[in-house]
Length: 227
Image (cartoon, rainbow, N blue to C red):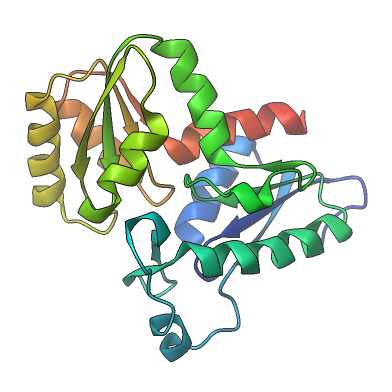
């Protein structure tokens, strides 16, 4: 039972709830004094209905894990519209702070009140850490490469990217890490909320550059906001 004065964090994944993996990792970082409620932008949809909202192109492509562990590609446009409604409901319920659990850019959600968008947080962190140099990206799908590279690129910053599904096995993670290491990045961003600490550990064992895991980086900012 939530105490009336307990800090309340609302999390919205772009797929469906429950996502025990995401919630547990966030809880471990924000601490036991924070009550987390996690929902999904696609909650209430059947598997067939999710299959009926594929992306129309690379710019419309999002990847998410379903509660079953299955990975799916879905339309960003559809997710954005449904997320807007869900986040409004969370604000009305009085959460201390809410966040969208996706590193994509969502222009339609700008100005939605105190909603943390990981893309904006990570962009600020990387700008501070690497004003010039080579940024390495791990991203879920090859078809997202142009879109995400353009999101990160700025004068003085070269962007290189390697696709890696967040549901990949250890051998595939290692292969991606070797490909990334061969590109000699100065800093690596694991550009998907579904990447795990275990995956980051494998990447760091192979690629010498410092790496930012999206969920844990944003979680530490959330803890600051909740204190």
